[in-house]
Each structure stands twice: as C-alpha cells, then as structure tokens.
Amino acid sequence: MSTSLSCLCGQAKLDVQHDIKEVGVCHCSMCRRWGGGPFLAVHVGAEVKLDGPISRYQSSDWANRGFCAQCGTHLFYQLNDSQEYVIAAGLYDANTELAMTSQIYIDQKPPYYEFANDTPKLTEAEFLASMGVTLPEA
Image 1 (cartoon, rainbow, N blue to C red):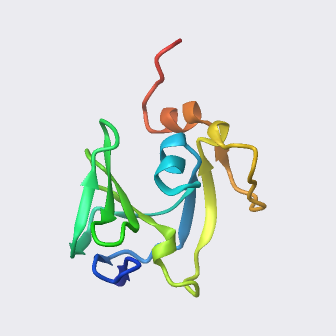
Image 2: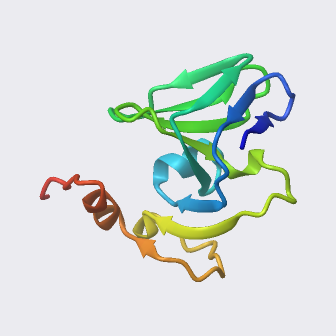
C-alpha cells in the first residue's frame, strides 16, 4: 500500500510504501528543539519517494533530518546506516488509524507535559542499548 503525504504548503511530497499504524514518541532534547515539542514518529523503512524542495540537516553522526525548504514543515528523520525514514506523524490525515505504541528518551521529557497513553517508556540508555549502542561512562 502506498500513502502520499505532503508538507503544509504542499510543495514537498513523500510517497510511503508501508502501511504502518504505530506512532513512537521521542522526548530527546534534539527532537524538542527541532519541533518545539516531542517528535511523534512513524517508522516506514527505507522505501520513500521524495519530491519537491526538501532540505536536509545532518543533526548527528548517525542521522539527518528533512524539512520543506519552502514552508519549513518537519518531514522526517533518516538513519544514515540503514537509510530508514521516520516520518512525522502529523503529515498523516487526522482520520488515519494510528496508535501511540512507545516513548523513548523518557528521562529527558520535561515536566510540563504528559501523555495519558499507556506505552512502554525507555530511557536514553535503555533505548540506545536496544540498538546495540552504549553510552560512555561519565
């Protein structure tokens, strides 16, 4: 199944080839700075077709972030090694059946918001360990 998504101005377009129903939430400081709040994300794999004025920012050694160069809409987060795209959930229509299934970097979540959804919550260290990455000791 293919899903067509676009930014606020409609110039940047994404064609996603997966029928994903799960939304993950990232509370890390980088995601919050990028979007002014937590990043609500849909993992869609590496098969995404992009069109239009899309700019990328290399936000870390292992990932880049894409946004519309015209209106600034946050579009995706892409892992450099696997090329997997993590698409902003807000690009999907409101009637799309999505469910929040996880939260990561819960230890970096500020106290001024809280989701009521009962999901698994991983700290930074737990999340990185699940990906085979260990934090250096302080």
